[in-house]
Each structure stands twice: as structure tokens, then as C-alpha cells.
Image 1 (cartoon, rainbow, N blue to C red):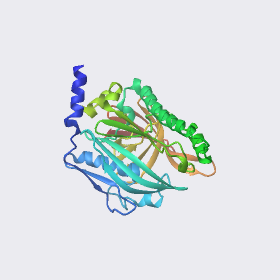
Image 2 (image 1 turned 120 degrees about the vertical axis):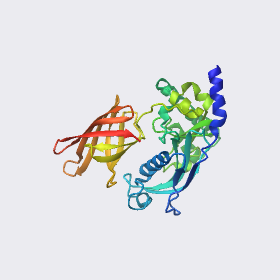
Image 3 (image 1 turned 90 degrees about the vertical axis):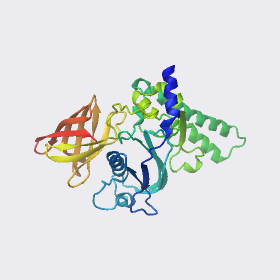
Image 4 (image 1 turned 135 degrees about the vertical axis):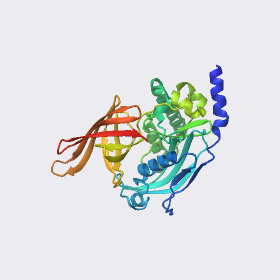
Length: 356
């Protein structure tokens, strides 16, 4: 009981003081279609550089200090996902001192324009992106997923009751009823958006409607709030230390992490792993530090082992991607050790990476 009291005294006290020397400004050149955050952190330039590198590579597909304009790819629809993306605003949220949460608002245009809101959360002790699954004990993740899904179901069902109680319901209301009766609610920690607050964690699940039906969707996205006290019994040791303000750092998964190292012991590279999916698949991007040209990886991460394919080109004749290289490597603590094999020559080169 004393441990619980102490934990919440820490959470409710000094842990909410923000980092005094952390500042966020607009990445230049700023335009009406590009308002993007860049952080400065005089206490630790390594953490500052790490967070900015993650944000710019993951969101803009731009490597800091490389040639060109940071907004060039996203504003021109020249990214790997081929949408035109405009960033309009960002905001730093109030959080426990070990955490930086930034909200980002913008618009993406593919077949149609769509406004979006997203949140990025970082561990200020390391500069690492915070994965939702790392916050919970492995044996409680299914339970937490259930809590999220029940809150969505309750929100949707309460609105359905309201709609169905209407007498002589209009055609629009009938369509709304059909929309919400077929709403997807099986969201999980893997892939769901979220952000930290002063005393609560908010998950944000996608709305019930597609773009064509959005005009009928009065509920919109599902914002689901859980106090830190509600989640305490599910927290992992990492989450408890993170939220309480402790300087103790626990090991977390390699998803959404940056690594630096060398191929063949002489070619310096940097790698950004994206989120590791529930089926163990993932994508990543890496670049040789000398030329800063991004190269894509796709693979699986199972039992601390990476099996990766680096695609070379797409064969129109075979209707498939032809691999340039194959990577087999093991996660050993904060290092990744393995081989990079040229698919054409079959020559093996060493691969050694270390977490940034």
C-alpha cells in the first residue's frame, strides 16, 4: 500500500514540471501549408537531434541536413505513400516531466482531401518514441485492448439508442443507424493513436465512417480517456518509471527506434525501424550517412531475430519486386548484429548496429 501511495505522490507532484530547457519552434522554411515542429533541448543535444531526426524522417521522409526543402516531398505528393500532405499546426501538451507529447494537425490529399490529427510521444530520458505496447505488462495487453474496445462500443451503442428512439426517423437517421451498427470497434494497442496528459492517457481510435459517409458521422473519432490510476495495475515497469519521473530506464522493443552502425565495418548507415505489427511484420528505412538516400526494408521480427528483404526494383515481367539484398540479424541488448547479403553476387557483408 505504501508503494502505491508513493507512486501517486510522485505522479501528482514534481513529475509534471515540464523540461525548462526544452523549446519547440517551426521548422524552416515555414509556409501556410507547412507548419511543422522542431525541438531544441539545451540539456541534451543528442536527444534533441534524435527526436528531430525521427520526426522528419518518419513524417516528411526528409533527412535533416540533406539537400532540398524539408516540405518538398510531402507538399508535392512525392513520398512513398504518394499523398499530398500539408501541416497546419502543432501543439506541445502538458505531461509528466519524462514525456514529450506533441499534437500535429494537417490535411492529406489523395483521391480526396482529408483533415487529420496525430500525436507523437517521446521519452525525454532517451529521445525514443514511446510505443503503446511497451507501457503494459505482456500478460495484460489483451485486457487493456478489451478496455479500449468496450469504451468504443459503449459510446457507439449509447448513440444508437438515441438514434433509434426517434419517431419517424428520417432517411439520414436510418443511414446513421446502419453506419453505427456496422462500426469497427476491435482496435488494439498496436497501431492506435494516443497521447499523454497531466494525469491521464488518451487513446484515439478511428471513426466509424469512411470518407464517403463522413457527413453522417456525428461521433467522429473516438477519444478514450483513462486516468493513470485506472491503468496502474496494468503498467509495465517501464511505464511506472516513465510516468513517476524516475531516471531508471527499462528495455523496450526495437519498433520506432533509430540505430546507427556500419555495413562491412566501413560503410556508416542509419536505420529507422517503424512499428512492429501484431503479425511480427515491419518496415524500415535506412541510408548511407555519406549520400543520405533513403532505402526501404521490409521484414519480420520474431524471438529477437530480424529477417529482412531490401527490394531493388519492380519487374514488370514477373509482376513482383526483385530483392537487392537479404538481411539476417539478431537483437542483442541495444545492438543488432548480423549479415547483409547481396542478392546478385550472394556475397555476405557484416551488419552491426547500435541504438542511438
